[in-house]
Image (cartoon, rainbow, N blue to C red; front, top):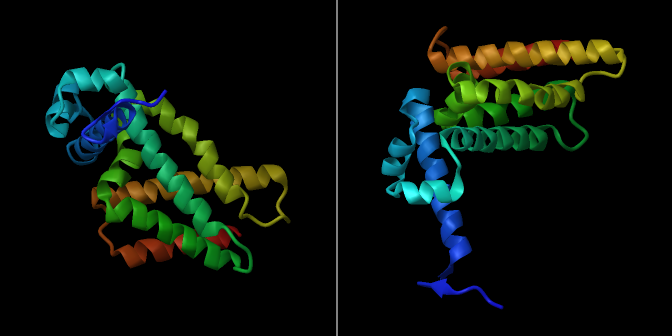
Length: 196
């Protein structure tokens, strides 16, 4: 049995499009005005949809905020995996590729940087989720560290680097200290390369 269409689209396609509109609206609000700006009513108004369509995709505000966060985190993880993938590059080249990919994602669209790095600090719905995602990012760094380190040293170094890099990017997004993007990338690359 084929799905009925309306104006050339199926109900499933229209629901997916409305969900994407709500996610985009929440990303915009969370990434520019902060956690307090993200209410069901505000997101619906921003997306130009009624609350009926909100509840078609999400049970509550918290589920929406977590979905936005996970979408940005998935983009960041994919960008980093793509940057360090492949062979033939030395550790400094891999570090530069990873930092550049992360910077492009987080700073070319600062909303995403604020959602990934700042929102978990202020939004209770994201606090635990942010902590839960840290091991995946630490594993990416751990896998790039030299085999001469024992397993525990690699794990501890990776966790420490994730913390240091998170605070560097958070400071950059907050505007203190003020520095150019190139200086930020260079500093992060040196930090990662020294650990390799």
